[in-house]
Structures are given as structure tokens and as C-alpha cells.
Image (cartoon, rainbow, N blue to C red; front, side, top):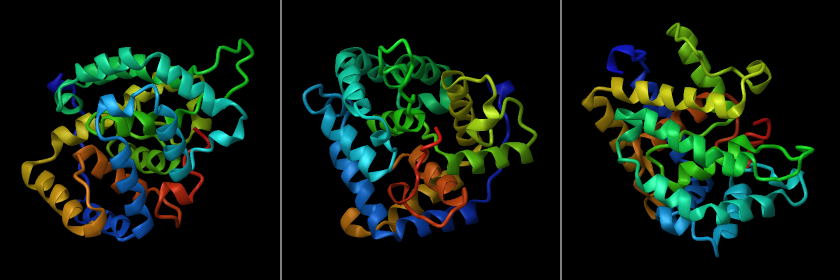
Length: 255
């Protein structure tokens, strides 16, 4: 698989500036600290009796707009609870560095996990949104080493990076450009992008990104982040708009 890797270069200085900018926001720091506290482990995050707390928290903090459809939140909670045991087994089977070294394992896990939320209703009429952005954010926080977040700001920035590198099978610039591509079929492109990017980062740049994220966080809200979590901050911040936190913006309502 290594021979098929797409090579990417990112401006590490600009990435560090984006990290510092996002980490300077007290409200963003508080948001991440709360999510870190309530998603402490795979088992705790997927505990059936308290899943509703994390669905409500994530939706409220990062404005995924589940409120748009009455009953959608409860359907999602019930579906996650129903599949919790299976999801825990699948996620525990992922090595810590699976995104970097074995992205096909992350793709396989996502192919089982995401539909639990994307297909949260049994309605044959298909009246509910699939809540693509919420699904990726939920699984990102369940295990922050593996699942990239999908939202329109990161989408915009990553698409620009891929176009500048003439990458094939790019992440679309917006959902309207996806044509007949389903969310389940598009998500592996996000996994592949982050996998290729992380593989291409030299140790010096990896260490710098990790160090700068740690050092620039507000001490009272400081948490330990994975490289994937940090890169998500970079692309979200560089993706346009004036808001610093997903919880202050429309946060993927079009996903």
C-alpha cells in the first residue's frame, strides 16, 4: 500500500499558527475539555445507559443540529445503544496507529459504525437526515486516533490541499458536488487523506505539532490530543469563516 500513497506537503508554520489561534479560545477549550471528560474511553462513551448524555452534549456544543427533526436524537441514542457491544468489539480491534499504518482497518470499522447513526431510522420513507457530520464527530470522540471529522470547513480546506497536489478521488468541495456519491462511500476518502498525510509527516514536524498543541492550550482545560485531533483543528481553522468553535457555527448542518 505504501507505493500507492499520495504525497502531501502542508505548511507547518501556518498549521502551528492555526492551532494557537483555536487554542486561544476559552469557549473552544472548555468545549473540548467537556468532550474529553465525557468520552474517556470506548466503553464509557458507548455505555448504553448514558449514551443520551453524550449525544446531547456533542450536539449542543458542536451545533450538529439534530433538533431539525423531532425524534432524531432519540432514534440515534437507541440505535447506538442497541449496537454498543458490537461497536466496542470493533473499535477495540483497531491498533492505536491503524489510521496511519492500516487505514483499511479503519475503513472497515467505519463501514459498520457509521451506518448505526446514518441509518438511525427504520422509516421506509427515509424522512430523516443522515446526520453525516454528527456521526463522524461522535466516533471521532469515541476514539480520537482513528475517525476524521467531516464538516464543511474542513471539507473546504482539504479539498483545496488535494487539488493543489492533483490527488485522485478527492474529497468533494461541498456535499452538493458529491453527485451520486453516498456518505458511506465518501468517508473512506477522508480516512485515506489523513492516513497519507500523517505517513508523510517527518518526526520533527509531528513532534512540533503535538508540542505546540499541548503548550498553547489554556492550562486549566489542557487535554492530551492525538495527531488526528490536532490536524482536524488545523483544517477546521483554515477552512474559512469567522467562528472559532464548531459549537458557535452551523457546524456541518449540510452534512
